[in-house]
Length: 213
Image 1 (cartoon, rainbow, N blue to C red):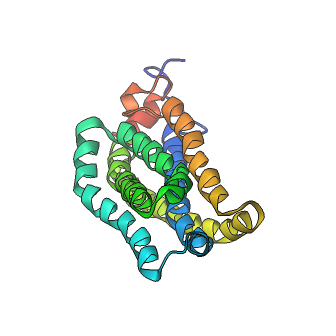
Image 2 (tube, rainbow, N blue to C red; image 1 turned 180 degrees about the vertical axis):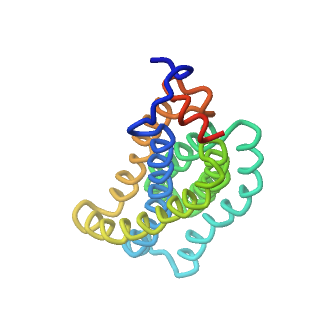
Image 3 (spheres, helix red, strand yellow; image 1 turned 60 degrees about the vertical axis):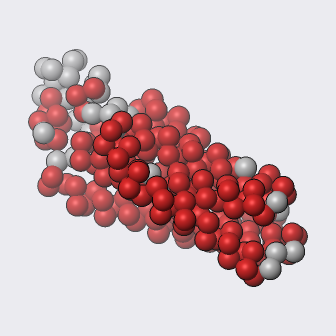
């Protein structure tokens, strides 16, 4: 039944799919953000980093993050939250995956990768705000953002629980490969299941569209 004439309350509202996938974007973001702190002990030992070197590796992520905070908001407003969030996850996942390659190359290469990873993750919050603003009524938006923010805790805890086991079992490189791959899996679902605006969704009911409006 077409969205124009379907006035039934849906069992699973389309905006709930948006909520779940956006939540996992936050989880993946913090899995990827925390993994370097877990792998750093092994990396420092293998590459002979000084504490200053390790400090640079940690800090360059945040320099990239800082530089893109305003830019992320502009891009989300200009091109839409779905597009920017999707590409942000793919972008930082690429640099998560190639972190071991950069580490074996040189400290400057690793710093560049960490900086660009920060650039990618800076797009998460502003694009999520745009998505929430388009897909959820004002009465739900504060609760939705609180729920999404809890993904940062789950991602951090998940990394701290799973990361050491991955490092000790498979080596420090695997934590970047495993967590980085999650972003690409997520992106497939995001691309095919999410629309930029509720009006673009082919099967949304008029009931839900009225609630969102």
